[in-house]
Figure 1: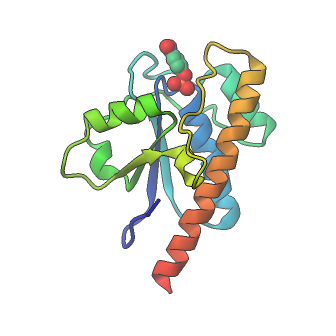
Figure 2: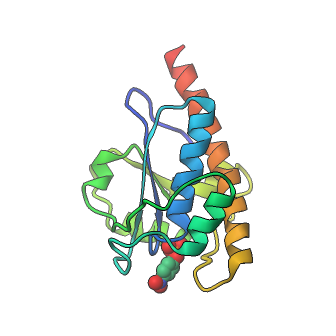
Figure 3: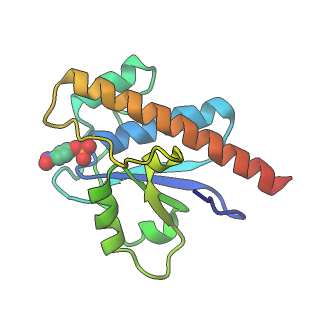
Length: 166
Ligand code: 4NP
């Protein structure tokens, strides 16, 4: 994946409901970025509007807290047209939501669109499974998958930031 230069980094994570995977991804990425001193603005949204204004699912809040990350203040928001010009990177948690993002993306936009799991070259099977209809163990697995990918993402962005400033 190639990341843009010469502009402040901003990453938007997108899932379906914006109460499980994308708030977890935002929290994990924020923590990983802070750890390595990467300056980046973050947010998360859903392609659907079912949970607008709601806090993340308690199981997502719980698993994040177990890893020292507080996502309890997040509020569900639906993807908006402005997001395509406000963010440098819009990353979907699964292929269905990437298709939904692409279907409504304006041709003139700032954001690069992609899949979070494509940070791993050659391992891009694409989707973080939706844990919403699962149990706590599904949320634990989801966290592990997301935190590994967001840590890699933070490292790649940091490297590119340093090489573009060199
Ligand atoms: P998320 O999970 O996309 O990871 O936030 C879901 C949350 C809610 C629903 C579906 C997926 N729902 O159908 O309400």
